[in-house]
Amino acid sequence: MAATTAATVTAAGTQHVLLRPSFNPNPLRSVIIPRSPFKIPSLSISCTAVRSPPASIATKDRLFNFAAGPATLPESVILKAQADLFNYQGCGMSVMEMSHRGKDFDFIIKKAESDLRSLLSISSDYAVIFLQGGATTLFAALPLNLCSPDDSADYVVTGSWSDKACKEAQKFCKAKTIWSGKPDKYTKIPSFDSLEQNSNAKYLHICSNETIHGVEFKDYPTPLNENSILVADMSSNFCSKPVDVSKFGVIYAGAQKNVGPSGVTIAIVRKDLMGSSQPITPVMLDFKTQADNASLYNTPPCFAIYICGLVFEDLLQQGGLVEVEKKNVKKASILYDAIDGSDGFYVCPVEKSVRSMMNVPFTLKKSELEKKFIEEASLEGMVQLKGHRSVGGVRASIYNAMPLAGVEKLVAFMMDFQARHP
Image 1 (cartoon, rainbow, N blue to C red):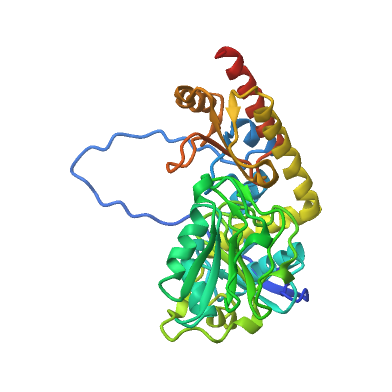
Image 2 (cartoon, rainbow, N blue to C red; image 1 turned 180 degrees about the horizontal axis):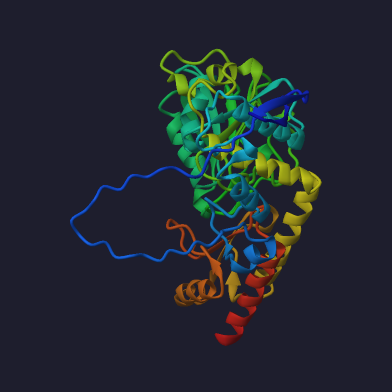
């Protein structure tokens, strides 16, 4: 049996060479068909080879998907995954079939972690963990790992997700909302000086970007307690811009908005915070257990992690998060300028200084036109523009993978729609 080589990279960057047996199964097999008393008509069967479409064809056939999550992925990533789907790198099986403890997947998960560390400059003081259950499951994991039942935790509630995070944490510690944007319909972020923090709080929690309401932290508060830490749910702006990880004790994010498909959640946890979980903590939510087992305590979401790895590669190839942020700023500016320049036909309720680069909610002055706007946009190849069911209106999610052309097409449609409905 012949052998092929495949380079692997450990999390520390050391390169190894694996020898993989080549896989060349015989496609012809004998088939015995029993005699039948019935006359079987002859069939004429033709086969057509299916090949991966070139990028130009893929672009032509694809919609502009403005969904909040699961969301659009880079075309290059999808085409790469398609090419490797049946037989990953010549190993004879799909990523979906391989053992999570085999050499091929070991390479995939270690390289994904290494590339993420490069993107965010994550030091060795932090563990990177690939988890399941979404960021919503981390709402419980945080107090279970960081607090005792009698400990306090402060929550800044800037939208639906931080509100849900606080309510879940209250089951496991004395979590308290120290500021809420609900009276202003979650359109603002407070002045950090005005936050009435608990001096004994174990951590201060924020949601760095509220997917539903479209508010985003442009800077981050500092916990009042010098022994406290800052914790952030970064699900909807993860890897959209550079972040100083050292300012945080824990960063967590569902992958399905900006860096992958649904099914995997990424946690970046300072190592000295692990190992003191509450006795009732389920083993799957214990940060130390997961870190000590390199995210392999049980079978992880292998294919989702593989796609995340491809996305991280793509972001690095773009020049890293500094360059990615420049593209995101440009896209968001074009869309917000169109809204603000519409003479009130379109309205974004969010305070300008904290408008999200990722999720742009807006309403039409004539609310009865919103359904028609969404339907006509869909006919033009722009889908998933309906606002969240809790707030209504329109929402355009313009994550990393949304191309500039998609935003430009949406803006052109908005101008045309306004002209047709004076």
